[in-house]
Image (cartoon, rainbow, N blue to C red; front, side):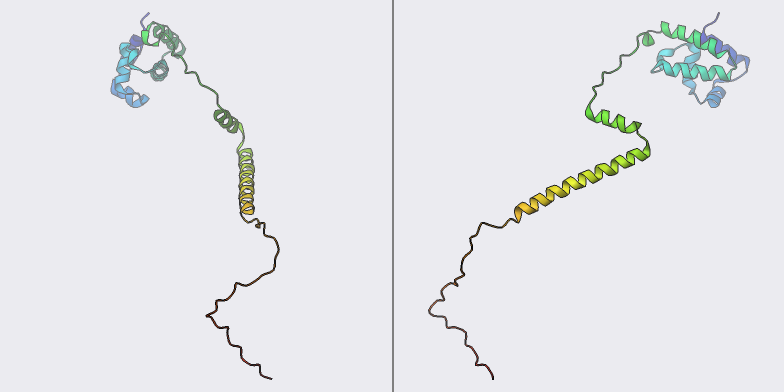
Length: 167
């Protein structure tokens, strides 16, 4: 039984389609179609691209898609680039990522209510801090009560004249 590349190429030629026509119908680049027909899967960055393109291409050519996909999986296991799965990066869970994930699960109305409550809490805290700062600055000084005594006038200054009162 011919491999996936040969089946695709034979079906395309049987339908009298050029690579350019297949590219226009499937929106797959011509160099990718050529790579699929030649079995050069290492051109693609990941096997998901190969599977998607072959599924689209086989559907256009009216081939048995499940049978083609099973044969493709067997061929991809032989490809050294896709043999070992790439390790997933280890992600550390932080408080911020957990909060964002939790917010993402909430509905829009609950998110809005939470945002309003958070805004009220932050503004109340800011108001309290401002009030404490201003009240500490305006405290009266510890001045004991006393009698006011004006400073003594220098001897060379005469007092203001007073006008006699009219009766």
